[in-house]
Image (tube, rainbow, N blue to C red):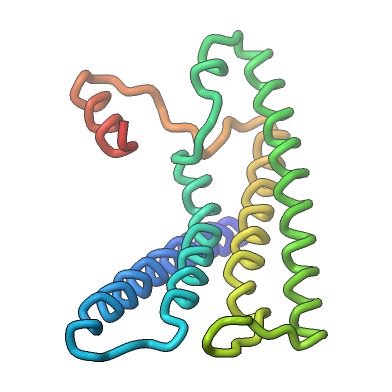
Length: 181
């Protein structure tokens, strides 16, 4: 049940990131085409920037779990199994600590913005805690994903984000095309 809940959380965060990507597209189109027709969205650039931050941070956990986050796979693949497992655990420990640190302080900053009623300085005054939620929630979900993966690997299983080696030349080409290489 917990596995289903966590996988659903990561997928939901990925969908939210996709939604923010659509919001950015729509805002940019309205701002660009609106010039021709005299239509303007006050603080539209601010909304697009906040949406970009939310998109980037909310998509991190899904990207991590999908095995698409930048890793040191070239180094790990050349290590013997025991050393590889040790390096993988050390990397997950470091990733968990760093992500947890940033998530903690992002949530703390968002809470302080809410508590002190901080407002944006743009054309439209927006409470800062609102756009800060995207990166606070995204970092928190990424920290959960790192903890989840660390516990999984410490229990003796292989990392779930690691894709099996490609078996055919076509699969190698497809993976390279999907990753943007």
